Image (cartoon, helix red, strand yellow):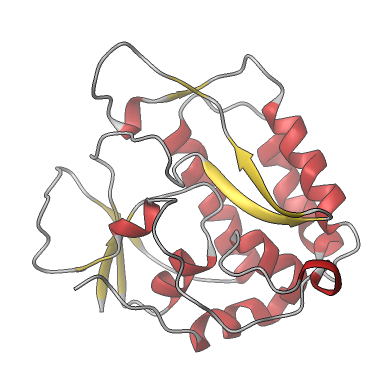
Length: 207
């Protein structure tokens, strides 16, 4: 199966289920930036439950702005806050120590554009998962895709989450299993078994 989907900030489980079960993956690079999407947000499992990590971006006065042109706002120390949130949430998880050295540089060096940063995050996660995948990128926007399965709808944070099999989470004894969080949650809790878990899950495209 050939698929197309958006690069997002530490993609959620649904994105990676689609990716690992595809033969070819294409990233949508030429769409407009929209609010309320996973382009600049992800969710993790913190001590008090589901926690939003949001990357602040600079909005222009233009009604439409290309995703590739959107800059990250450095007005607040968001990287430091996100990294501290990850440490607080996952420091006691089985595999946080195993992966933290690969991930920490993402939160200590500056990247100007949100799309570039998301691609960096994706590359690091693929290294952690030992996932060897060739990504192609669109050169123009097409509303209707005929030669690929279209998973671009997954970028919408308001889309109903597909349900996946539970795995052990750090605070599941307090709040139960929280479905479809960032890939980081699965990675820190399942470690090398994360890839097998993703391959065992199924995801349906919108008809």
